[in-house]
Amino acid sequence: MTTLLNKAFKTAANLPAVEQNGLAKWLLDELHSEAKWQRTFAESEDILEKLADEALEEKRKGKTTPLDYSRPPFQAHPLNTPNLFSSD
Image (cartoon, rainbow, N blue to C red; front, side, top):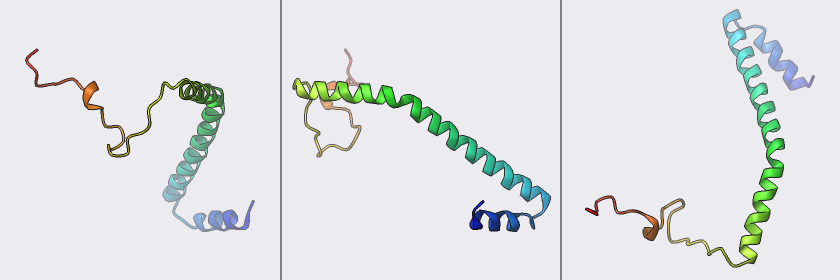
């Protein structure tokens, strides 16, 4: 155990039992969440690699368009947006 972690646990040992339990629950939840994230990311590496390869292939074939920096991110392109006020 590191010196800092040991100091943190000694400090936490002086807290009331309710606060110790709250701190312990939070710490365990964080550790489990981090472990779950690491597993999820590790499992998705093959998928991410495949998606990257597909994107590079589309770029190589000229199927991509340059990013338009004049539009905010995630804004729908006007030609692809249905007119919600149309009477059609």
